[in-house]
Amino acid sequence: GESVGLHLPTLSVQEGDNSIINCAYSNSASDYFIWYKQESGKGPQFIIDIRSNMDKRQGQRVTVLLNKTVKHLSLQIAATQPGDSAVYFCAENAGGTSYGKLTFGQGTILTVHP
Amino acid sequence: GAVVSQHPSRVICKSGTSVKIECRSLDFQATTMFWYRQFPKQSLMLMATSNEGSKATYEQGVEKDKFLINHASLTLSTLTVTSAHPEDSSFYICSAMGGASNQPQHFGDGTRLSIL
Image 1 (cartoon, helix red, strand yellow):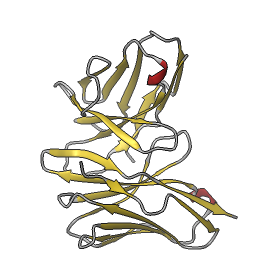
Image 2 (spheres, chains in turn orange, green; image 1 turned 30 degrees about the horizontal axis):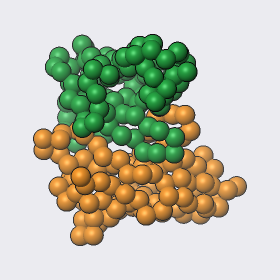
Image 3 (cartoon, chains in turn blue, yellow; image 1 turned 30 degrees about the vertical axis):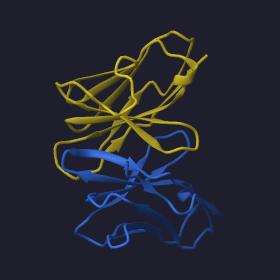
Image 4 (cartoon, helix red, strand yellow; image 1 turned 90 degrees about the horizontal axis):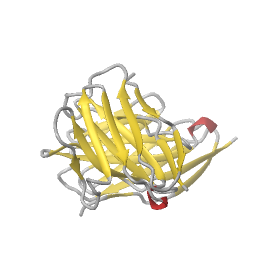
């Protein structure tokens, strides 16, 4: 079946730098995308989402970019802090009969060095 | 924000025991809840979709009789791992969403299940 994948399994940055986490998806029917942050021993925490009719959405210190032409999703974190260290997952929803069902990417481990 | 509570957070039990995990939406009505399984250093794998008042829909490869799901109310879904064995040891996570389309799922903090 189709799946969501990530280019970089690990990312190390210095505190204060900007971080970019990438995600490639293959299901062209996906119309809703979410980024989650998962800290050790906890469940995923919602960061930001974007619908397929948009190509950019900004939150507090985070920006999600969607390129449907190449089926690529990215999460940008500005002024990365040690508290941002976690595993980041992108997830996609194909909508329609698979309403609500999310397919998760493999995850990227972000490590922020003080 | 939306809060999903999962209980217990950790279970250690002997092989052959059945274990029940509860997932509650605390401040919204969850028409749909999802159950995931996550092995160390891996991603979340959807096990089943649970709709209030109806039978759960299981993903391919997930044994219905092994993983019993009940969603009796709009705020509670339970997952029972029946006759658990060491290979069932994993991190089980639930999520919940309301009735609106394209709304993010909110996740519980997971249950670490260890079968001896």
